[in-house]
Amino acid sequence: MDGEHREPCASHRRPALGDGFREESLAEDLLLLLFQPRSGTIAGEGTLFYVLAGAILADLGLGGHVRTGSGGVKGLTVEAVADSPPSDHLLRDTWEYLAEKPRGVQTVLAARGPALREPLLDRLIERGELRRRTRKTLGFIKTSVLEAGDSGRRSLLLADVRAVLVDEVGPTPRSAARAALLYGSGTLPQFDPDIPWTSPVIARAEELKDGNWGAKGTAQAVTRTVTSSIVSSVVAAGVLPRN
Image (cartoon, rainbow, N blue to C red):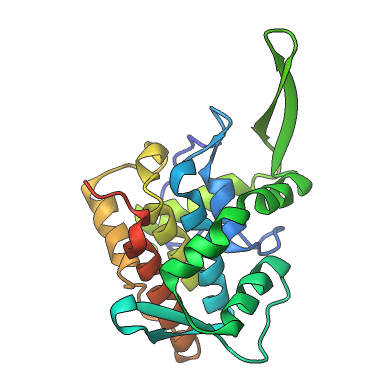
């Protein structure tokens, strides 16, 4: 359940996201996390396209499909790795866009983000992780509402983010990117009390946002560096609200 408190265990094992669940894209995971079961709404709609496009870029980084470069005054640039297209068509669309020429992160977010919500939502509904129901208001006006499905995946994702931010379990690159992008969406306070909005949690999220993802094996070093740079740049591009 969303309100269930997961106590850290002695071995600091993270929730078993892989047990019975195929790996989904980071953008799908984030959209599912941002769905609020109590209200049937998606949190952070105003900045959603930034977050989803940032997750697509992060997934391309994790898969070794893109590399980063310095764009000078334009900041971080991203370009496609030649002959390394991803199989997922949503990822591939962005990879092909980057294959035309290197582009700044902000340019990618603005160009690719607005078209992502509906196809990603359709995927979640097709798998039963969310349900779309039609109801009538005022007796005759039909409106579409979202409801939680029965897969249990959102609870596992929420527990994984909690493990990283609250229990300070060493993150995998994927879980670090997921937690940092959720923080960057500006919606993390809405997850309290499941993920308490406290100074230690904010400090931990800031570490992840800045690319401090902990020690990892050398085989992951390149993709980890590329992905953490992308995530940091996405958040700096204006996703995270400034007080």
